[in-house]
Length: 395
Figure (cartoon, rainbow, N blue to C red):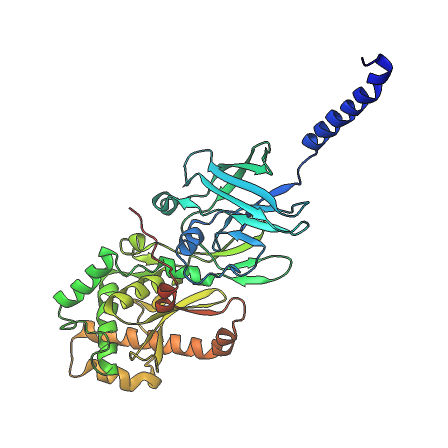
């Protein structure tokens, strides 16, 4: 029979065992923080990266776990090897911009900082419908090694769909994002086809045949849509780039969607360039959107191999040139032929002046554009489509 004296060591051992177990259970889990690629949510960026086939988000970095194009999640540093973690993100307020997104992973190395991003089920129609900045609530539910952490609900600022982020500036580097502009180009919008149909109905050209013909025929096709836009009253209006900040500095360019551009004749340089790029692609021509500090213009290939490219200054739509573009006099004569119609002559003068102006601008900045200097870029829309960037659609 055990005496009280004999029981004391056993009771003491049991106390230590129980207290040790409780202490292990109450040990605080390592801290984690919400992660957003741009600090705030930019709908145009979210939609642009949604279908990327060649990730621009460091997909080969083994500390980036989950969706290689992920823009939301958490940052977490485990305190032991092979830490099991599950992360769920829920949009906890209206508008419900995404459905619940969850990921479960095992993190191999203690002390490493991991970025964990689930695949986000964004509601593309709702993202595309946001015209004014708003704020939504995001709830983060995290479980670490079987221990569910207290849920956290954080505000997330959401920008207008018309804000196209250009550069992400942080403490280490500047990352260009001007390729997002390709998401604003929508060659399949019904309004874009209407421009081509109108050019055909007015017999500005007999047909749109892309590169079936010589360079003069390519010019004539672009001139035809230039005439239509000019007669519709499409004109330049000065709407400058905005700079907005979330948790980081992200300059943006305001750009209308195709749905807005075909209805609104007033356009800034980016609006006009994106609309023209949409029309060019619908015609079967390869288009490029060019950025320089404070300005955007468009270019297109004159042949199917891209051996010669010219540029077009859409801000000159409807502007009567104050001088005869001597450098492009031959082009003007080719496009005019024997035409004596005053409206056609005015359109040709405007069109040729717009080409000469944009060509000069590109030549002036060519080296910076080709060197990839921040603020300078030429975004080929064909390449963007091949990489998975699709047009933003408003349903």
